[in-house]
Image (cartoon, rainbow, N blue to C red):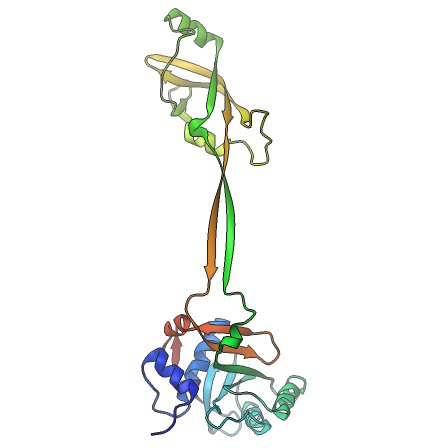
Length: 303
């Protein structure tokens, strides 16, 4: 029975199965991680004919969307690095393929000549650029210095209009009407819910009033610690029994309350794969929860 590489072992852990084809576990994981990191579709184990040679090329992964060929090498069992010859082989394939660029993914590392050659493809006008990626099982050391949990404290400011003090100012005609009915200067109990025009149509509700015309959070409280203000009305009424009370102004004194709410943003799952580009533009950890959402079917990575 052949020895399983760390990549093969990780694949079995994540998907409870092992590809029968050697190296396919790494091809699939590379295609999946690139899709997770970039949001671009990558297919695995693809075949494309060369433009000039008309021969078949097997691509470990391919993104038609970004016109990218991916070569994936898992040398973890041998314990060796990817050499220049591996990069040159991909460069040669790219010269014959209708593809604009390449990515080389290694589960180990790259030799210095391999890095130099890959770098040259980005400046050589007769070659297609190849970017080097480190895609391997992550370690505890990879987690050091990373922000895995963010705490955000939000201060929510509310005005307690439910327990506010109100003073209603009525029109002169309404005061005369109350006096006529023997109600002037007597306590009146009613539920303040809606305001009406002369036709009896609702112009605004009390809830709309306090929500849309509440004091600004930048307002300064008075010496009593309360926020004072007024709402002005024009030809608006509130009902009391069989009488319409015309409101001219309502003064309020309200307390401002501040509530603290904490939001925790954290990475779900356990980091399993490190994805790092040689140029440093990408350096991420992919978790088991992210990887387990991936399905592989007929050469496609479905997320």
